[in-house]
Amino acid sequence: MVVSMNSVHGKAAAREELGAGSLAGIAAMAEREQFGLKPLWREPMAKHTSVRVGGPAELLIRVRSCDGLKALALEAYKQDLPFRVIGDGTNLIAAQAGIRSLVIRNHGGKRKLCDDGISIWTDAGCSLISTARWTADLGLSGLEGAATIPGTIGGAVVNNAGAYGWTAADSVSRVRVVDRHGERWMTSDELRYGYRTSSIKENPGCAVVLGAELRMVRGDADRILATITERLQTRHRTQPTAPSSGSVFRNPPGHSAWKLIDAAGMRGRKRGGAHVSEMHTNFIINGGAATAADVAGLIEEIEEAVKSRLHVTLRREVEFFGDWGI
Ligand SMILES: Cc1cc2nc3c(=O)[nH]c(=O)nc-3n(C[C@H](O)[C@H](O)[C@H](O)COP(=O)(O)OP(=O)(O)OC[C@H]3O[C@@H](n4cnc5c(N)ncnc54)[C@H](O)[C@@H]3O)c2cc1C
Image (tube, rainbow, N blue to C red; front, top):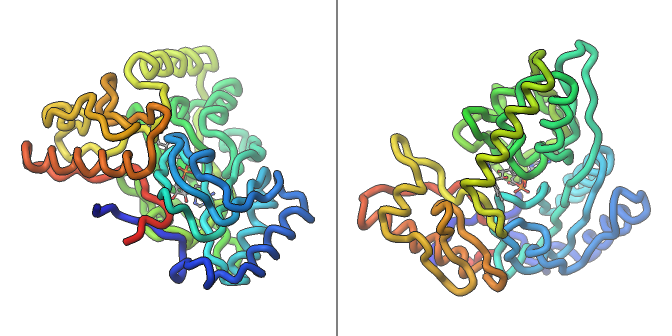
């Protein structure tokens, strides 16, 4: 099986190369400093991804604050430990063999109105949906499109998440990051935004997003909330709520991925415990017992069917994460 892999940053992450001591050291640091919840060893990624597949991360540390995220990332860079920060895992398909390194799960944080009274600051671990609702309550417009996208601000900034004509790039003015040289601002230009991608997405692990400053405009709170409600209703009518990673493929220029998948005869197609959604054919659903291999196999099957029957090459929107053995 040929699957693309986004491995953890740096060198190959074979367990024995990691040095159990350094992982234990960073786990002890996280516990001592109380950055979040208890560090978890050999933690199944199925518990931390929305499609609920994937084997164990060697060490998973959950952080709940920007300061905790920064301290852990700086320590991991200092020790040259391969690691990856994830948000809510809503765009990730983790390998059954797992992740042979440190995974930092970032969820939670603070947000505030900036001094100009119109921009906002939000920690990377804040939920995008709740941030959009919070701005609506303040009578600030700009995140109506974001209000239906699951996941964290960090994931949205890295993926350039988008819906209803909005993309994260439209709102981001600058992003606070930490990398192996320390902490700094990154401008929207430096993020080199493209369709569901950014410079950080293209080079996983090169920088950790601590938070973002987002541009807003003044609006009417009731109208903003009404728009959000209408979009949520549309989404509930048109997209399944069962475990998935959302849209698996990007829309090729001039095409809708779901229409191509449908036309290639893949609607409802099953593989093990995974199947192509009847409601929205760009979604692969975990019916309860799917494995990462089922999901990856179905993705390959779709790619082959669309290529051979319709002569279109699909590009994946979801990200394969961990040790896919290639
Ligand atoms: C039901 C459903 C509907 C969806 N609808 C949409 C949609 O309409 N539009 C859309 O664009 N997407 C959609 N998605 C996909 C997904 O929700 C988005 O891509 C989202 O922005 C991912 O956020 P996350 O926190 O879950 O990121 P994750 O999936 O955890 O991570 C995504 C990437 O970001 C990186 N990352 C996360 N946080 C940080 C950080 N702090 N620093 C550095 N790197 C980081 C990860 O390493 C990974 O490379 C949907 C998913 C589901 C399940």
